[in-house]
Length: 212
Image 1 (cartoon, helix red, strand yellow):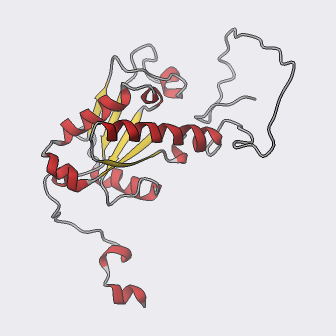
Image 2 (tube, rainbow, N blue to C red):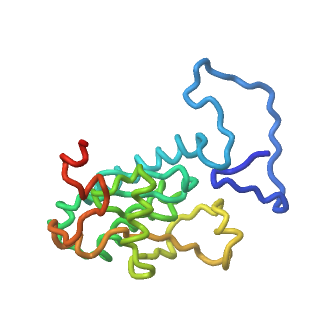
Image 3 (cartoon, rainbow, N blue to C red):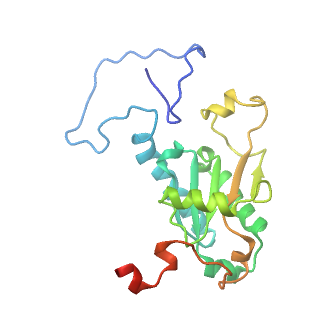
């Protein structure tokens, strides 16, 4: 059966669709993307399509002169989470607020063509590698305060209703909200001298001890 990038199939949901007759199939030797069996990650939906969206939203944010250094979509999120990394030195120099900054990020991405496919953005500092899901989860769990760190966008933003919660969730007929989730603490917008350090063998122990 033909699945979708979110990894779920709803057999009971059917509706008339165009019928296409295939008379010939062409192919290329040594193809770039040999096959795509859409479903649970990873497949080419995530490794090709989502990666392209990352490149586009990174370009949009950098064109707007926002201090975004990386954009990534964790494969485990089924092309639904997008993580952007902030250059904190430039962020502090902006003298902006968490809400104003997150609103800027959301307006730029969610109102764009690639943003149609982006329902959730996670904003992390430059001490978090967006490619490392363990680090992203750590930042979200420890720095993202429910409600206060969530900036919602509802209304004139293109959406993609293939995400299961859009059609099978609460109030499927209502406009779908998108969210920018800040995974940084307010102090990270104000100063480079932070009152905490990472508690880990990698970050907390002296180099001579680590070398042993």
